[in-house]
Length: 116
Length: 107
Image 1 (tube, rainbow over the protein chains, first blue to last red):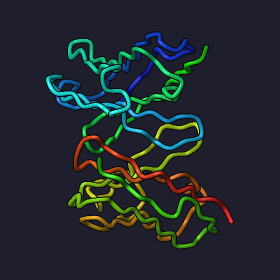
Image 2: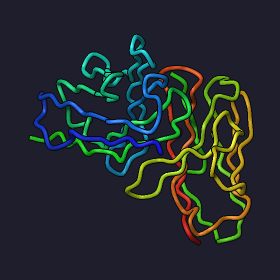
Image 3: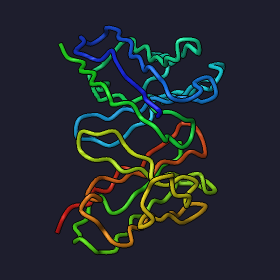
Image 4: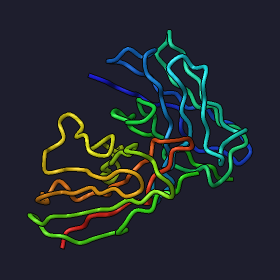
């Protein structure tokens, strides 16, 4: 059974940094691209970033480009999202998802609240 | 970026009704479109990919169609567990973009 277990959310002040993690099991991690999607309170889904299976290709939404960094460790089977220079508009539930195009498995979500 | 326009934004329907949700892309995206269902407080769930392929384990009352710019998700006979919000997602190009969602409520 595929499992994606997320950690690292919380309350953080504007301008600060936070790293999210997504621990994967139940599939051959190194063979799949992975994605982060977020959802602001009461709003729709918003694609954030995708990383290729090997990690050598990354893609970002314009709203996070230059501030967020997606990465992965194919030995630890873990996906990361390093979030720097956080803003109020980054407040959301963040989900990791397996895949580059059809996201067939999702993490449970972790809430990031950016507030002074 | 490709803009996805989803309609309606919400609808009220009864159990047993046929429900149709549409998604229009701002440019052609072949059949590179998926449909997701999300219930409150839960992660989204993949229903359909490549516009019309049913994900494993998804009931056959869900179906998808379309190609190019116009796509449809149909629920042939609405069940109580189908009351949720539905999103389309284009995976033709980066940045990936979701429709704004359709909330299906009980009439």
